[in-house]
Image (tube, rainbow, N blue to C red; front, top):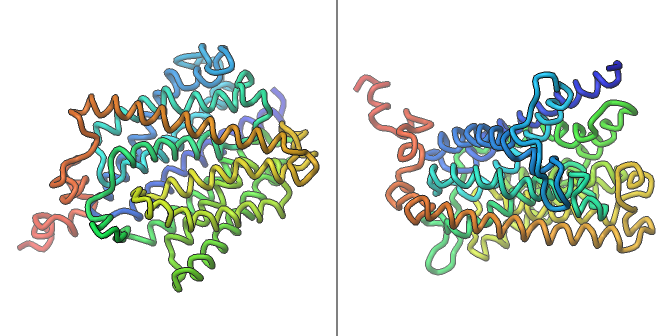
Length: 422
């Protein structure tokens, strides 16, 4: 192994650690975006998610994605790993962290009202039968969408749209949180308890995204990872600014959670196209992501689809836009380097755009339908309900699912009495 190869593997390992660190961002983002009585549950379940995703990816996920099989599924390399296969282990670790992110996104559909047992069963099934299928179609050399030239460099479809489709299925079956929508149709804001946590979570995700996008270059030769990082940064900045000004113009206030969702939407949108487009296009892609996320959040509320973490808007709608955007903006040079054809604006015609639209439709529908059916199975295994009781939801999942609050001195009178000596 020469020095360049060793640096490639070291870079991929560092990138994998950055993607794993994104789970810390999700903990702060999702806990801060929900109410105090569920904060410990959100945080603990995120760590639990990484554990499930790790074991399921090792057992079957990697094999279904990258094993030898056919255009629709891999059928080898289950229970992956050999003691002398350090190079393969680096790639395995990197791909595992992506699977964990997709599952964490899907978890957003359960927030503040889903049973822990129901989530555990669904997490196993999703990790085995939903994410790996979409990933095989697009990222495996045998995948049918890969062979059509589908462009998804780091996962706007594979990770973000797939996770959002799972979250949508859960959100629909679980129904809205208590008090979210009035009988008169009014939308009631159930504010998250800590905007500082939410902002810090977004910043950690932003940093981790360089492992996500730039890490997907797979190596250091030519320093192409720097170009991908530049596009990622520009799109995130544009998404932030546009979301802030759009919500300011609509509501008269520069709403902080909406602005933060604009940042994430810009990041999600550029994830597919970061290796295919010029920097000016990255700004446009991120800006459009930041704009559409604002209107998407309002749309789901009008449809009475309760999305506490805004996973459907941030990861779903922005993921769709990001995937389609390469069909417009992919340059001939970068398309030749990274796969597929040039976009419509560069004379590539409608071919690449058509592939991108097809992939969004097929993958989104598959992930949603498969998740919905798996949730129905899960519902049967959990006594006919995915949701905690009304009393448990009012009390909070920290106490009812785990026996203690994430903020015991604030939420639990007994703990407060002990602290004060009363």
